Length: 105
Image 1: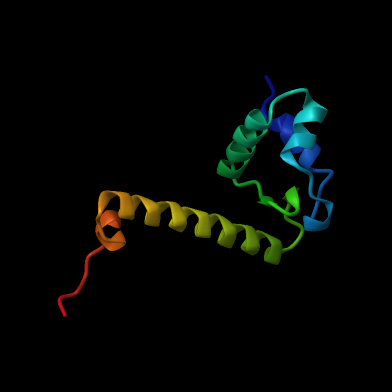
Image 2: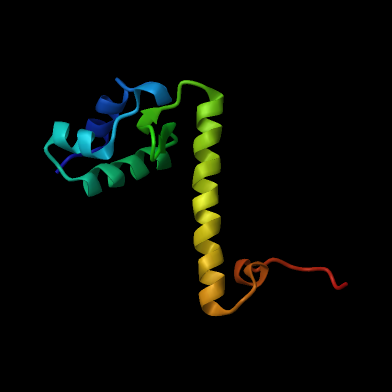
């Protein structure tokens, strides 16, 4: 099984969105599964490594603050979408799901 450092070594050759690499290509290079690659990417992000990704560009290490910001906004959007779906399934307003206080109006 691969470890996050294996994935990091591959990603260090892919700086910036223009040089992104797909999970499938990383997996093929490391003789592993895309699932293992995604797991390692998560671990790298948890360690604070600026691993960016987007469906059209693949994975890459951020070369600029703007690339990092774009990835953070993309991740936030996905997270909010998932939380919105959960609130709909539970029939609970999103602020209630998140435990936010509301002012009486």
